[in-house]
Length: 211
Image (cartoon, rainbow, N blue to C red):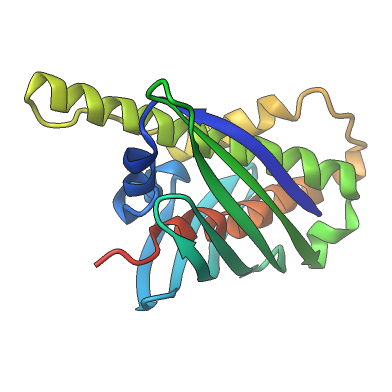
């Protein structure tokens, strides 16, 4: 499964780099993230507790960070595992200064998946991963804007990230255009959770080299 795209952040490249290295901020991008641990300077591990429909559980992910060129780019190798499936993959992230106070993020990579989530088809896997990626990036950008506004006004940052329920509801909304047969409904909810667990790796990896 390929994962690629781009997103424009309302902040400088240095600000975005600092943001994606902050574990506390990254945890808000995917509600339910817990137990983020720094295993070494280039390796991280985390868990997510999430519920989508009738299925819930704890999913684990690990990330290996390499080829860092602050504040421009880095490479991630990820793996995730939970009751609904497992997977591994690698990808590159690039931050480009737009010259107008904004930053373009480009990302590309591939994930190999197995278990229940591999049985529902490429189209569904791609759609769910796009939804989760979009929501995560939007949440990070809102956190960045809140931080910038607080700095300008000389006050503490005030920002409330989406709840797990809101996050799950948004995934379902994004999937509304897809057609699911009744026999695939239970498997789809499991797939959504499993893909979330893999995306933990994508986000947690951005916290590399934090002292």
